[in-house]
Length: 212
Image 1: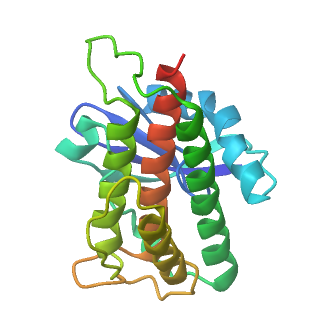
Image 2 (image 1 turned 180 degrees about the horizontal axis):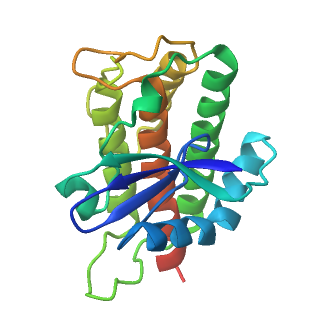
């Protein structure tokens, strides 16, 4: 079985696979969210394979329901489930960061072959490639502060600065933790890994879909 928690907003629900950071999908209701999660399992396997992890999820089992908020309805995971505050041992920390690093690798590869101008969404919106990359990196800088990692803004072309920030994030998240926030008013390690990986993968899949 694959343990899942549900983040329940006023109008929408996220279903997140607890032990697979980044495998979180949204729907209008619990059933729709779980169906969306199942539909994206084949795409997530690309990330797990890159991380060198066997990935054959069984039936989803909902083990937690946590209240969401307007951020949930907007389309981003927001709530920290109680299970994310449990102590994290070295194998779990290393596994979570392996998946995050795999998501970064695949995102960078897809960005490298995607056209600058991406197909617009159904309402004519959506960022083009470079603006999407810049958005992902800017979010990572903000998320990094939640685990005590601070970096100055850098340009899209400054890969050395990008890689330095990522190394610092991995250095923090790859270590065992007691389950508490990693910085004042920050996030616990498991939630930080989940939020970072989800955001990268969400835009990776968006870029793939809108590049065709």
